[in-house]
Figure 1 (cartoon, rainbow, N blue to C red):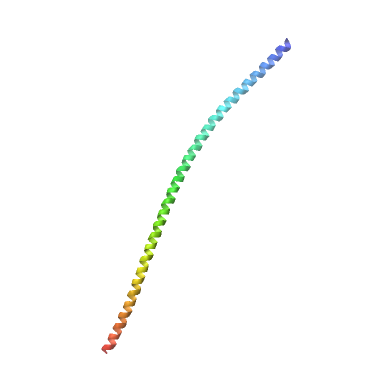
Figure 2 (figure 1 turned 60 degrees about the vertical axis):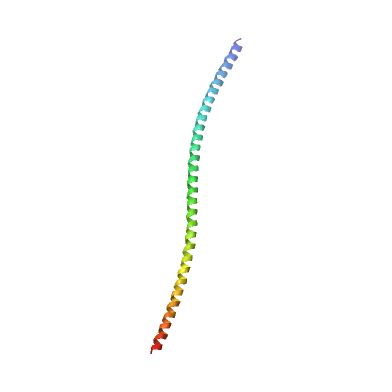
Length: 111
């Protein structure tokens, strides 16, 4: 009987230790779940910030693309205008040369 009481007492002691261990494990799980929720919220905040940065960068890239397109159009217009001015200058120089030549002939004719 004493043996049986000893075994029961050992078993009871083991059961108490097991219950205590399970209690501590449950508390640790609760703490870890709380920590995990905090991490999830922080990760979600970072994701939101990154999405905002991506949207901002995409808008900036689009603005730069539009500016580049406008610059290409402006450049083409300026090239056309330069070509017209160069032709006009060439014609002006040619006409001035013809005028000077005619004036020279006229002055030699007068003599």
